[in-house]
Length: 462
Ligand SMILES: [Zn+2]
Image (cartoon, rainbow, N blue to C red; front, side, top):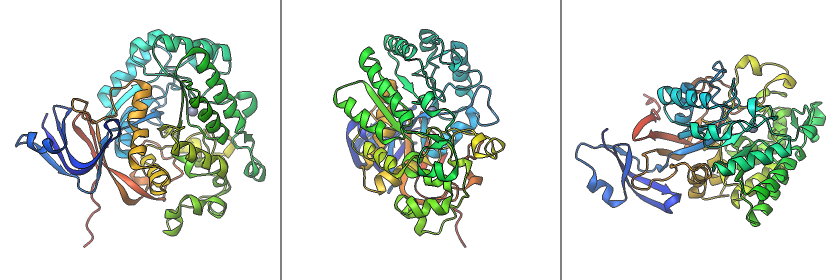
């Protein structure tokens, strides 16, 4: 494999506390030099990519993605899902086990790993189910799943309601050195709620999904992490109370962690009432970029592309998630990329499946709400997409250390662009962000030394 020299970029590697304008040399699929010696060590035949003005960082990792294989390939496949990841600047994704059948046995893990190696263009790491069939009744064979190569267990999409079963899962996970990831949802509180329980659910006449339905399970997970010593990770946090619980538990040294998704800290529940109400209530403060630039982000009431689980919450919850990200209570960013076919989403709000796509917009939305809004530094943002998820999942990824796999993301934090439905690489198009003016974009995605995505320059205007 040829050598590649990235010259003149702002190289940010939080794992090594590096933030400098310098060069990176890649050869034989590994990082071979970073800094002044990179150019000297580069063989004469090395390919050169000038990245002046751009950020060069360890390949981004998204630890919460639904790739829908096996069994739901009308929504997404390993090929299309990893193509969307590459476009978004992600070199590694972690796929969730709520497929059909569920990833609750070693054979299915082997199948996905094999197919991902053939058809995927980025690294795919696999999670296994906590319970057989994600039914929440009987533990999946956690040891066998670990031997087959999973990196964590989760029943994502569902939540284990039986606290004793969850305790046993934590005990096994600890034995096998696996983190337990949990989609926090108490079924008795949430019942058939479809949006955040509050003012807008009342106005719209939709059944409410109260914040407490999440917070109860975050509290349960903290207690079980403390009891068992297992690493427990709370997925896609949406509620202010969850952040407060997590902050307090981390202070006590409980092995608990959390993640947040851009839609929860970009949008609020007013979005379900339509764009007019959303912009009037929250929009202008949330996306000044968009509201001042006359972009075409308009949508009607009850748009099912604003239906996800957990739901978009109040402005106060959104603010708390941002604060949690700023003070490192929440250390990981991810998309919860959840593709669904148009015909599934084009139904009444109550009947539509939960979830939106996110791989191609998460970097821009995170940059906008966190870095451009001056809440966190650029290296802190990159850490939440690289070294932090790698550490949680024990992945040998997320750094530009010499000898590491040459997974590298090059992005322009200031590039302005409009997310167009026609340009998406995902097989599905259920994003609420089409037509939005975004700021920040992946320019090149390099996996194991191979360039798998390069942003094509806009055609020159004559
Ligand atoms: Zn979930």
